[in-house]
Amino acid sequence: MAKIADAAQPRLAKGVRLQTDSASGQSVLLFPEGILELNETAHEILARCDGRTLKEIVQALAEEYDSDVAALAADVRETLADLQRRKLIELT
Image 1 (cartoon, rainbow, N blue to C red):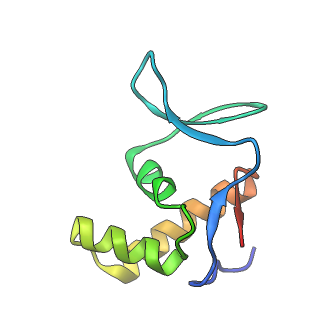
Image 2 (cartoon, rainbow, N blue to C red):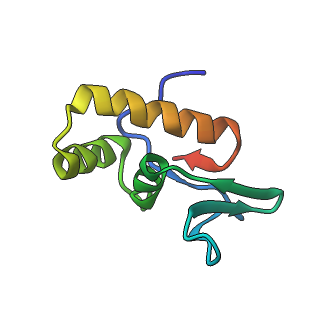
Image 3 (cartoon, helix red, strand yellow):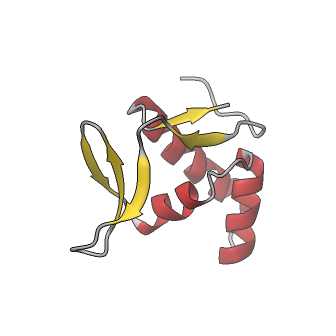
């Protein structure tokens, strides 16, 4: 799979919702075929998939968590690529 470009705008795929499970308090992605529990990192990334570009998402996370942009960018790309393979996000 090709590397996700800095200008790509990730968004949840049609029919996919990000929410908190009322019973467990766990962040989850709900989709027609099931549910995916998210770790804190994935939740923080997906919460920013609101029209921002990948570069803007990485920059916001780097500022909030005082992290290295290059290392963080690799982690964000890996997470988004995994979600894209599962057809849970789309890139525009």
